[in-house]
Length: 300
Image 1 (cartoon, rainbow, N blue to C red):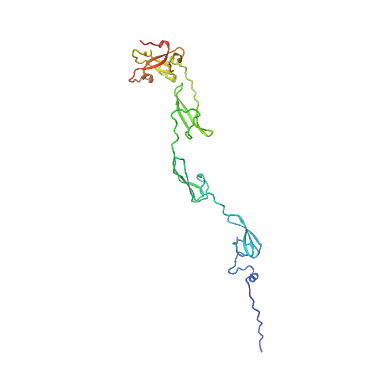
Image 2: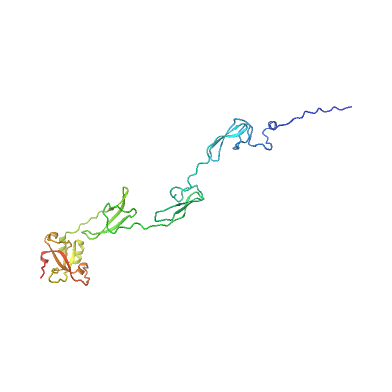
């Protein structure tokens, strides 16, 4: 007896699309594993990679935390919207020298900054690994400050910035007294500001009452202790007696205190300048002195 042959089925071809529809989202060799049917991939897709659901939009965040959108167009992912993740970098070196410890982003960058004209070598600052500026080459330059003038300037005279305060000795009726002049900025100009000096010298007639050299010196430069010098004849006479006299320069009696006369006499220049009795080679000096009438002398 003949057995019945089984009917052969017609041959068929399984396509990739059909296999995918039968097996779900089965990843076949050469396929993009980010494609998950009609849903958005979990990770940011590559531009141009394949997709299935046209007009599907997916939103992601890029490495700069900026929003970026992708759309499936004609079976491929295309960038729909994105923000620039590469802003223009700031200049490598700040215009002015940064403070030590201030923040920087230029890791390893070194910047040179010049100092005053008297300091030709620059100071180098470097952006360290910790993201802060530090001085790597410190230039030590301390130019001397401007010098104080030899004489006391007038109040309001221009001065050099940075000179600060200067002390001067100012002759007064109370003797040489210290007075300060300060260089200050007035408007846009540096000018001297001279501090006011107060002095109440004794009246010249007080000199005639001083009986000793120490008492005369205590009255200040208003008075002078004089000792007779060696006079030659003919010529002005020697001072009549040792004593304390007004220091006023005189040419006539009008310049002297009331009750005194202006007379040219010979004094001892050594003792006059050194009341303690220091001697010197000279013994006579011509000097106009305000003397009381009883001390006035005439040349013999």
